[in-house]
Image 1 (cartoon, rainbow, N blue to C red):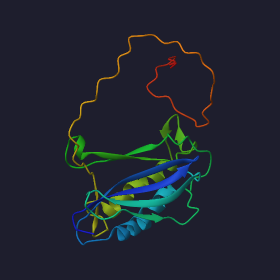
Image 2 (cartoon, one colour):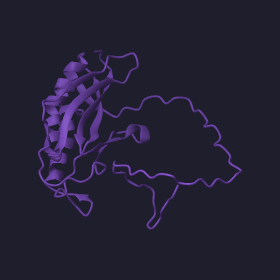
Image 3 (cartoon, one colour):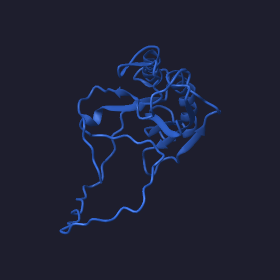
Length: 211
């Protein structure tokens, strides 16, 4: 609870038995606030906007406040009252389908731009892969709300929305991959079906990979 600390805010829920979340960073700029007080501010201001912009099949479970300094305040978790579903009815798209909210600053460069992924997109809230009203309107209200409360002239006197870019660890070269000079043909003796639904990425049309 020190002025100048930056905290990572993580709003977590579940969708189709998968964990989903969104979040960004807040800096304590004026008067020192405890992580618990920061959580209460976030839950009061932002969680209702997240509920309004997400599918009823998303259940929001908790919010986490993490100090970005290794020697900073201890992480605090605030459970939300349960159940805590989203507000938009109808069928929902798979959990991997999300909306990107970009966070812009007055400086250029990758370290000065941010984004987060917002889950719980409904089928009625999208057309041909594009977000449409009423969900578009609700998520735009979330984006606007972040600035209303925590922007440069936000109503919160102590908290400001930030793009956080911390230090990176020294580069460590990867060890060389193993080299195989022989050929193996091993008899298949069993098959197993994984009940978790997976997604394939970086596959061209018609490509199949067997391994």
